[in-house]
Amino acid sequence: MGLQALLLCAGIVVGIGASFTGLGGGFLMIPILLFLGYSAQKAVGTSFMAILVISISALVVHNKFANVDYKAGLLLGVGGVVGAQIGARLVQNVSLDSFKKLFAAVLIGLAAYLIWQK
Image (cartoon, rainbow, N blue to C red; front, top):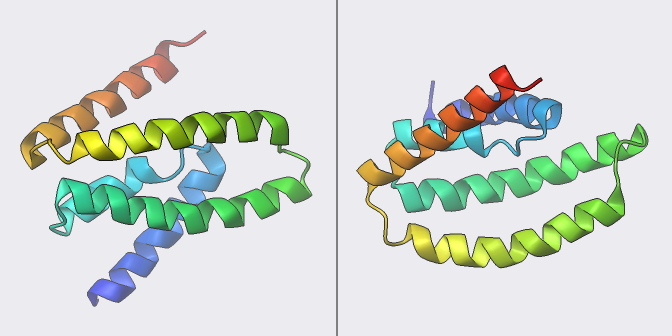
């Protein structure tokens, strides 16, 4: 299977996961891109491009089911724009090894929270 076909298949899996969980897809996309040899910075940037496309598609479908609070979404989005500017600059100074460890810690922390949440 060629790289383009692999990326397309990975996108399908990530799209399902992202629209089902609301986690944006980065939690799946980043490890896939790192496995394919992308640098941490390029994996993050490429993931955001994919997430943009996936998010628009998921928004359209969730809107049809009246599952969108536009006011809350816009407020979170505006805050996210500020945070994204900071995060994009911070990741430029992080080594691939440190990035992998930090990313894994975030995923483990999220998993632990979800498992032990009442």
